Image (tube, rainbow, N blue to C red; front, side, top):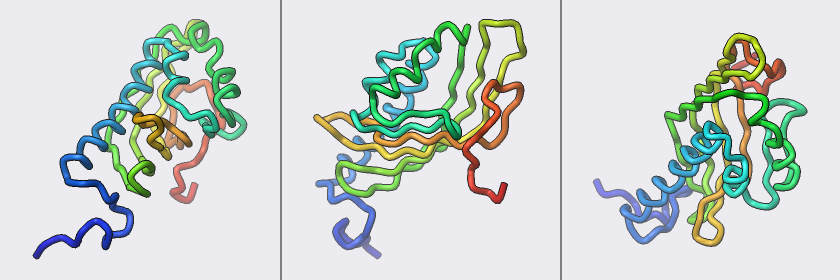
Length: 165
């Protein structure tokens, strides 16, 4: 049984071949990994460059940003709040909307060492993203962190994962 051409499969991009599709998926995965790396290395200016101008970000209710300028303010001071962080991203699923847009879901384990004296905070959750290709590069348009559970984590409110919480 042969697979139907991409045009007949809704949600599958009409890319020239499977190699191109795989290369685009790897580029999207790299976007997620770069975000985690830049966060762990306290490089907020490089994180900001991963987002489109009219981005929407939500880490928790009342903790996020609309637009790149507001997002930059959200990141202001993260280096003075954390001594170190370690973000581990896995289980990445990419659902194509078109050749230049995809919905992405990934699991995140984030460990936070604070600058003040307190236990390390751990977050277990999921990223729910919309990514778009602009100027030949994949960028975040929407990034929503949904929290499964936490241990000694500094943010008490959370976006639920939608499991009937």
